[in-house]
Length: 177
Image 1 (cartoon, helix red, strand yellow):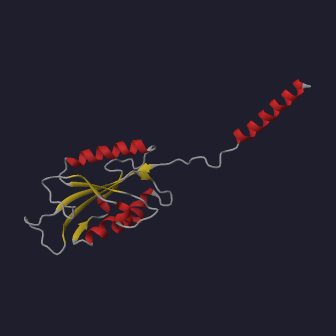
Image 2 (cartoon, one colour; image 1 turned 90 degrees about the horizontal axis):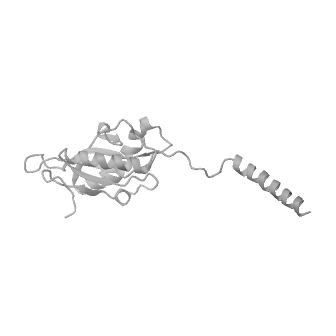
Image 3 (cartoon, one colour; image 1 turned 45 degrees about the vertical axis):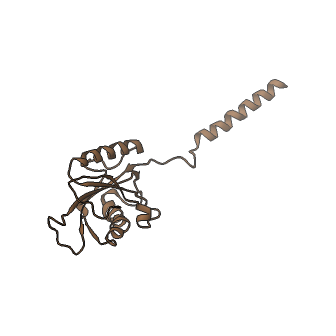
């Protein structure tokens, strides 16, 4: 009698485990791609002619590493998502303080100078971003970081631009004193 019970329970466990193993998990993680954005910009005082007393500042903005959006194809990501986000959350608040920030579509790069725009892991994308920052330090310009968060864009409250490298040869317009 005891042997029949053990065989029955073992069979039941094997059948149930086969059902749970064969069906995909409802919360299985999707393939995630990671990227960052680099924006090269020129900064100057609004309404003041660029001169040796009021020179133009060369500046790079490097975003945090984030998940590549799935709702926009990568070939149109810059125009459809990145530029509107950057303009609303970085440029407009900066310009409201009396400065101008000029950049164009050609100045926006996904994951820096690399031909690869997305990475399988956050760590890999962070490593590439850090290398890009180190490379830019030798290019003559100030480097700022900014948060890239498409879920709740609320100006500088979301983007939180921060100076991460100061080139002493460049002016630094709008920097906190």
